[in-house]
Length: 288
Image 1: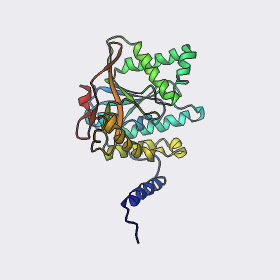
Image 2: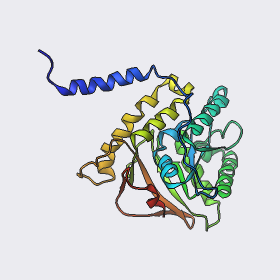
Image 3: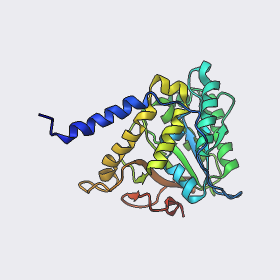
Image 4: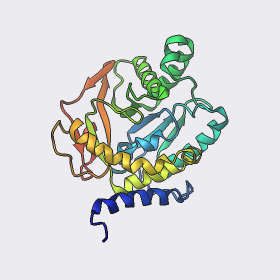
C-alpha cells in the first residue's frame, strides 16, 4: 500500500533538489538584468567581513537597487584569512558583484588584516590604521544607507567589522548621517526590527551570485542552503519582528535586519516595534 503521508514527498523533494543542485555549474552565468541608475543616485555601502557576505545578506540591498534606484557598493573589508586565496577570492567577488550589479571597493590590496576585537584591544596602532581606511570610504562616498554585521554575529571578523565601522563613524563630523542596517548570518539577532521579503527571482539571483564564490562553495555548498535559511527567517521574523504570538506573514523568503540611523554622533532608534516589507512595497519607504 503506498504511503499516504504527503509530507514524505514534501521532504523528499527538498532532499532531491539539494542533491541535484550539487551538480549545477558554479559561476559563469550571464549578468542579471540591471536597472539604469541615475548618475547622482544615492549610495548604499555593504561592509562585508568576507567575500560572499554581500550575497548572503543582500536581500534588502538588491531590492534597494532594483526598486529604489540606489547604487549599491560592496566594501570588501577583508579578502579572507588565507593569504594564498586572497587574490582569487577578490576575483570571485568581482564576478559576483558584477552579476548582481553591485559596485565594489577594495579597502587595501588583499584586504584589511586582523579585523577582530582582540586587535582593537591589544594592537590599537594597527586598528587605528584600519579605522582611517573605513572612515575615508564613508566620507568619500557619503552613503545614505550602510549595512554592517551586528555586534554578536559570532564570527570574530564579523564582530570586528561591526566595531571597525562604529569606530570609523565616530571620527566623522557630527553632521554626518546615514541609515544603519545591521545584518546577521553566523549569530542571530535577539532584537531584529525589520523583515524584508525577497521574490523568487531575487533569491535565485542571490544564490547564483553566491555560486561565483567557487572556492568557498566547493568546500561547503552553502549557496544551496540559502533559500532554506531565508525561509527560516520568515518563521523567526514572524514573531521577533511581528510580535510574540503573531501569525507569520505570507512570505516565502525573507531577511532579518535591525534598522537605526547614525545621527549627531550616535545611533538613533527610528521606530517602536518592527516593520515587515513585502515584495509589493517599495523598501525605499524606510529611508525617506
